[in-house]
Length: 293
Image (cartoon, rainbow, N blue to C red; front, side, top):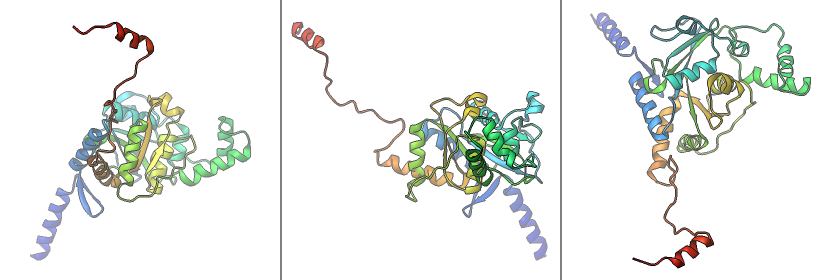
């Protein structure tokens, strides 16, 4: 009897947990993620949706109800394009190795292997990133150690607008201007102090640094968009990518609200207008000719 009760209770728990996950010992439902996403948009007055990113493990399947580029658009895309479609269109995108057209991303995400790892340095030099093989080898070493997933460990990537997310995110990508990034840094540091440390190469920005490096290091990250982000994903010149593990989101929002309460830092930044302006001499002479009515 007791065993039957335990089984039924466990089944009920699984049903209740279908759209939930554990974070810091607390259960967060998809509705809670969506609320946090809406809060973030309101606090930062974001122009585009924050992007919830999930790395799909090799034994997992893409869920129903998401857009696949080959199926829905009849094209292969880059991962930065998927980020762009999610944040600008509000689409939930699922991209597998067969649907990704970027060879560099295919390698970084472990979807295709490179038999001769030394060729990565040659590729980076041929692409014009470095002046010689030594510099290129140093660049390749950083990429291999910090921005590359294990071959075959993940089957694909899913991106969804955070405020209406259909997935449990691993990483959050926020696209904003420098002032919005400044607020996010303050929100992150509000409870822990210290400083944000950035290690950035100028290559594989949103995918390698934004997703993989942030996922592996589990650290708050600031990423400058690269040419791929701008050419293929319509990232604008005044935009910065702020990336962080999803479990940090709640505390970052609490931190932003904490600093806003002091009314010293806000976004949009308030202008100081309570002063008497000075005018050029010609305007002063005009005043001398005016008479009150």
